[in-house]
Amino acid sequence: MSERKANARPADSTSAVAARLDAVEELPAIIELRRYSYDLLCLNPADEVVDVGAGTGRAVAELSAYGFQAIGIDPDEEMLAVARARYPDADLRIGTAERLPIGTATMAGYRADKVLHQLAEPIVAAREARRVLRSGGRAVLLGQDWDAIVIDSSDGALTRRIVQARADTIPRPRVARGYRSLLLDAGFQEVSLAARTVVFTQALLLDMLTGLARAARNTGAITDEQSTAWLTDQRDRAMADRLIVALPFFVAAGTVPPDTRAGRRQATAS
Image (tube, rainbow, N blue to C red; front, side):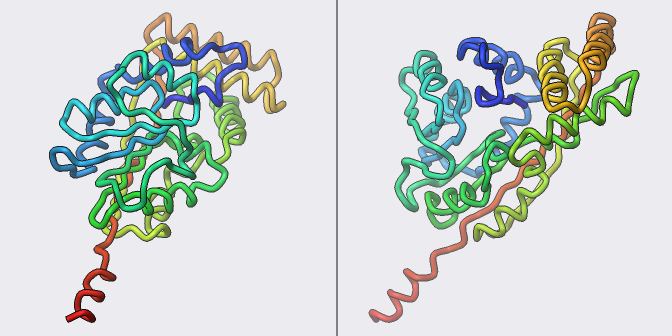
């Protein structure tokens, strides 16, 4: 659910962003979703796996604790510094989803969690996942649909306008619903797609809601007065334990097909 530092307020420090990430990543529903993505990797002990968009390094540490050889990739050097301080033994590298510092056909697993919506061309990242995975390797994509957020509110029309306006500020807000097609287009087989809706009632979601209203106000979709009224309603709901935010997540998984070239070469040689 995290917007990551690229979408944070200019005044936000890396530590503040990391603290907000922690608050969400420690919620039971998000823990379960993360573990589900690990299961879809279908890894064997000591398999190599790359986690793209590693952030604070939590997934890399968890995958390593399961006995896998995990590598974390992130484009933000400051966030990687936080991750390295937390997990000094973790293999964390600077890099982007479109150009991974990983050798060709060297990984058994690839995982990208809440990353592809930030990319102008997600297919480039999907093809890069295909490149680094060996035959039989598994890619798992996990992310939320920014255009389908459900928020209980006293003003439904205004809420729809706010959600739409925020989605329009993101390069690919609806990419998650297209994960299956993305993997198929990149050459993966046995591609599956599942939807998981996570319902939040915690007041910590107010920070995300504030970000939605700010984005809508900055784009001119709503006025200052509308933003204030909407956020007041959400804060009142949080104080009364009536806050409801539902985030639809999509999780796709695909397998790299067998490399038939090796078989053809062997048959030709014999």
